[in-house]
Amino acid sequence: MVPTEPIASAPPDAALGRLLLALARHAIARELGLADPPPNLGTPPPRALEKPAATFVTLTRDGRLRGCIGTLEARRPLGEDVAANARAAAFRDPRFAPVSVEEWPLLDLEVSLLQTPRPLAAASEADALAALVPGKDGLILRHGAHCATFLPQVWEALPEPSRFLAELKAKAGLPRDFWSPQVELATYRVHKWHQNRGERP
Image (cartoon, rainbow, N blue to C red):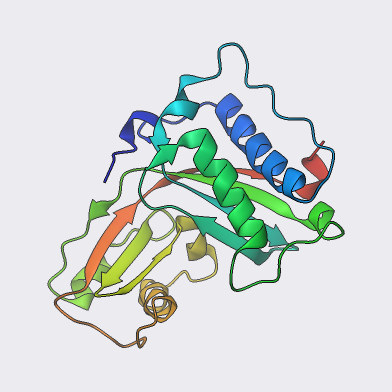
């Protein structure tokens, strides 16, 4: 895994967050064929945009999820990763129909920048639950071909660790009461920036 720490270990400044939101917004608007001026990256552009990073882009409508796609490993430059995940969240999330031109003005936008995941050593499910920090930890679960993640924001809907983990297992295609010594867990934190629909230019 390519580390994301050079970008994400220290809190990025608000200007970078605004730029990432603008990149995500522009990527979606351009796919829809809408006139949306490309973001002003500055001269020269921020170096952070060129460093590998892992991000998620989340779309919501009236507080309900409308699309969420991201990457867990830092394989692309930050700017490219945000734009690609924005397009995927809007048009290729298999849980939802593609966003339409009419719906786009109704959606809120959020970009999450992941810190490097850290393995969570747990001899049992009870150990795993005890180690989680509700409200702060994102969680990755892997078992064989099964893999899923919940961003830290999911704690808002699933505040109990036992249910948080159970629903993550279900998302990965496993029974909610499943456990095996071969389960691999990793936690991560995020920096996130949110833009309500009324805040977009």
